[in-house]
Picture 1 (cartoon, rainbow, N blue to C red):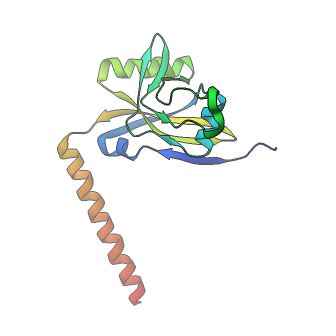
Picture 2 (cartoon, rainbow, N blue to C red):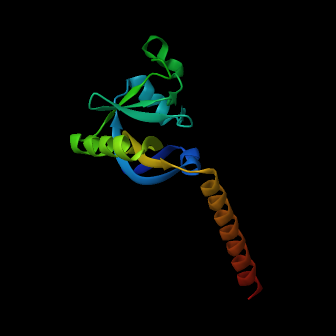
Picture 3 (cartoon, rainbow, N blue to C red):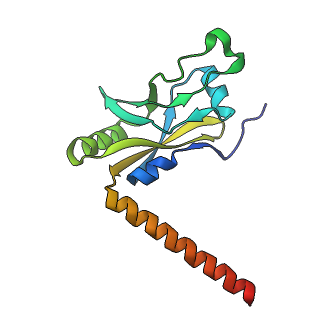
Length: 157
């Protein structure tokens, strides 16, 4: 079977954009078993309550749920087990410095297939306050109203 080309999104963490300012994004590989990859290809993954941390120079993602593969029987792994992320050492050092000094946190933002390989988009994020969330919602509502007005005006022409 020829390798797939291009990017196919599998899962998004929309809650991360609501709760955090995403300052920078990193593309990471994941250490997975075969049945986990098959479940991800079927779209049976959730990033909703997931987060990442640095432990002994390695980055681990916690709380990422990958449903067990139906035909996997004894080869299935624990759906909530911590998964190791594959990054360059310089990227890990940069993230660690930001997290330790400036109060940033690491949050998985998206999961996708790139040329047949599973990749995780990891965001270096700063938490939003309640008033920031309200401002973002007000801006989104006003943008929606503007777009609606433009569409109705174009239909009238």
